[in-house]
Amino acid sequence: MGDVRIMSRRMVRPETTALPPVETIHLTPWDLKSITVEHIQKGVLLPKPPTTGGHVDVERLASSFGRALGRFYPYAGRLDAAVVPASNDGASPQCQSLTISLRCGGEGAEFIHAVAPSVTVADITASLLVPRAVWSFFPLDGLLGADAIEGSLPLLAAQVTELADSVFIAVSMNHSVADGMTFWQFFNTWSELSRAGGNDDVMISTPLPVFDRSFLGSFTVPIPLPFGKLEDVVGQRVHLFPSVQECFLHFSAASVKNLKTKANDEMSGYGITSTISSLQALLAHLWRAVCRARRLAPDQETTYTVLVGCRGRVGGIPASYAGNTVEHATAKSTARDILDKGLGWAAWLLNEAVASFDTAYASDKLASWPQEPRFMRLPELVAATPTWTVTGSSPRFDVYGNDFGWGAPVTVRSGAGNKIDGKATVYKGRGCGGSIALEVCLAPQALARLVADEEFMEVRLPRRLPMKVAARLSVASSLGEGPRTPGRRPRTARRRYLRGRWRARDEADGLLGSLGSEEPAGGGRGVGFFHSRSEGVCLDGVLLCGGKVVVVPWWLCA
Image (cartoon, rainbow, N blue to C red; front, side, top):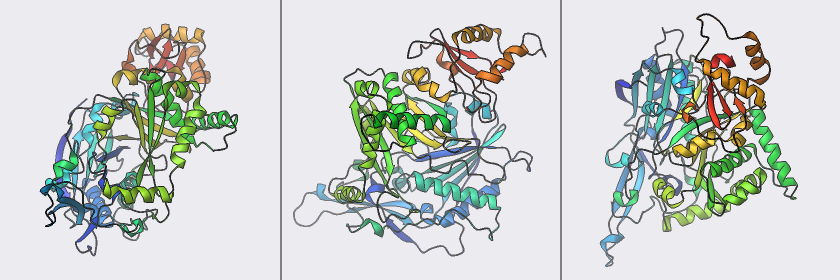
């Protein structure tokens, strides 16, 4: 896949009629504990603009980016750290402390224009496996939140990359000043302003962000951190290229509904009245599959952490609050219980963990954090708990509404930031309401087993292929990429049979064709994965037959 070339980069200042005076926002415990993680990196794949000869109006995007910054003006500022000297009561030098704040000086955010003329939509979407080249579409890569302090780096950067037949627009945002909700509020604001085309009379539906933090109650600000220097906050730097691969999976609304119904039916049999949500049922389905893919011993403990946003759960937090409000809800069990007790039981564990959050719990966590600050250090967490799975983001975030003026997104992808073994990112699915997409990162061999897991993957399919048909298609797949005779179509009967009965019309993803002869979990019975289109691109199908993963050319599935 081709290299990305940077055509231009600039610092864009916020466009506003009255730039607010320089002020300081003191970071909360929710903000500060995220200063040791990498940036939030999300982006959308868009069609080529039809009215400009296929080229992006870069100046229009830069202008609307500046206007969006005008509404989110603190994010055009910089992080600032100050050392508070030790008291004069004989305390040792180690008793000096550090404070970190957001200085809102309007210095600007970075805007990058790039091209990757050899990369196509198919390169990104035509396989379940997400290619590493996608990571090059994101700016501020490999940086922790704290890195913005010493280098006076921007808190926010956008990169517009023109591909051969599409456009990828990505944003990277410092996690110490924003969570996923705030990130997508900014993204939605930018796309809406671009769509308006500079018309100031157009009302923007995205609400204005709220930066006031007074709802958090009374504790000393800025919060003094018991460290002598910034390096002590960050800890040991681990700069290893992630030994993970990731796949992008789409679950239709019907499949998600079926999982929810199954989970609730199972738990009602035990007299449990808690209602398991669609997302909890899907994550439980993933949890069980990851346990199988990792081949955990039956007695081995496995944990699943869900990053829970406190807006709507904790009183007093404005819906459009701009900042971090995320807490961790963790469920634990043994691999045996997760697999043997069923989908409903695993979903119920997640349900109980999330239900434990309320205003009192969050207030206690906030009040106690300054006395014993704990930071998120993902490499250390993974090393300490190799059976850990974690899910962030939300299917409620508006991803596919980000039309910049020439069409809705084709799909969404994320950058390399915080890509660890066991991370699953949730997105709203494309198409009908209720569908959900998962971006799953695992060690390469575990991921190969996950996507070859019949029990996990068949949820996404309408029905199973009979063995007779599977065997026939396995032979047919050896015919190659297309008909032997140029211009000659495959036999009409075969095409009609697939089109009429076995093709998964509502599936819109690719395949992981690099699995080779990976043996499917669960015995290797024949099951077909057929996709008519992947977000507008013709695809092959995947056939699990006789313990093998066979790629069936797209023309047999069309």
